[in-house]
Image (cartoon, rainbow, N blue to C red):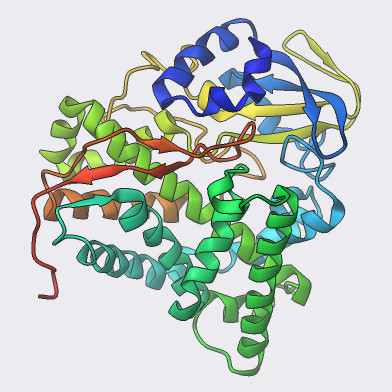
Length: 417
């Protein structure tokens, strides 16, 4: 049973089948030892899968004993040069993490984000305009994929002419090894190539903004002086990659899973659609809990420590499985029930509480609220008409992505027609 967690077939299952199988793993205890083969180093390794809510919360809060900076947040240690591309402050401990996060957080205040939140409305309308007359589309390609990435690109000041470059690179980075995105070559080299593309693009933009400031986030980052602290030139691109990859793909996956869930549970869709203003906030939280787009984050044990009867030694890897914790019956009544009015809902879909809680959680919530509100208003009979096609992953994926989701609806005119 434990080895199933690293088998591609486990993660290619439909969401509910996978989570049904996860029940047995979670019930065996909060920590499950998993042995696996590290393809990069060609050695046998192990990690401890953390599947219960209380332990995921405790580890998330305890950065002293469970480090984000040692190795990587991925299951296997990445080479140092890879961490330069894909790390940013998600792969740091304090004080370095606190310094970078504080600089970036200064540009994520409600006032600074007001313009971005307005653009979410505009971009949602624009993206739906592009397919609303067709009647049948792949929702991932038409909406879930472009919408959050356009928000991020506009926020950063990335020109629309570079959108395809950013899209293709982020698809490679979060492909989970899917050959459709990385081709026949070495997955790690494909990731490096994608990271280099994004780094070059961002470095060029940052240089432009240093010379000619604007009001976008890139300009604020390169000119932001927080008590004498600024992001160094080499820190800007990794932050953008983190934002473009994590911020984009989480929302993208939540939109796809959310639409699929509304088709599977029509009574819940009716509850939401009949009271959009009253239900949207709780429905968005329930999609993130139930689907848990981010599959896991890893921490590395810094010294001898015990938790819930499990003894760890320095160097042990713990992999927090958010989907399993988000269906822990000790934390959620009827956890396998999709309930758009669920409250309270202290889910871990944006990470556990602590220093690494998702900085963009409120932006993601806003994006999901706006896009489903617009779908209900403009395409009220939209429904899934085929199976969701998952990523063809090579192992335990960082994001449980859907790469195709066929939908059908009554064609409607563009809003700008």
